Length: 158
Image (cartoon, rainbow, N blue to C red; front, side, top):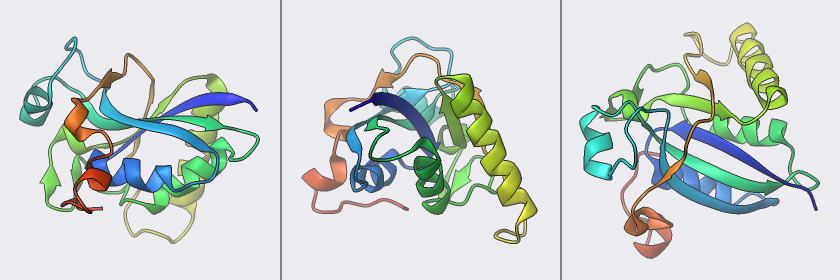
């Protein structure tokens, strides 16, 4: 087994986490905040848009069972990457589409995938997904972890 880390933001983190957990090879998934400039932000701070963080999901995955390219495919299939700072009725920079890379190989794969999507006719508008180096991942409050599992599906836009 070869364990690696991947981090993505695609709007409401509850649905993103739940979908990634369904993939064979994903060992664990946690929801939290990434890409901002405030230490240890809380949910209300992030929702205000004042911290610069996105609601994100950090994965631990076995790359002998699921490749990073397959994770990218799943990521782009689960949301609309052409809407800037918005997924469904959720809007603000905290709901942006982002790939937070952990090494240059992930960065290159993400950029290549976006170029492929922009060259295809999948969407009318260009992909606006941010590709940024992964910074500190701040784990969200415990009640957010596995939220949809704990709340019989809950409410989420994904």
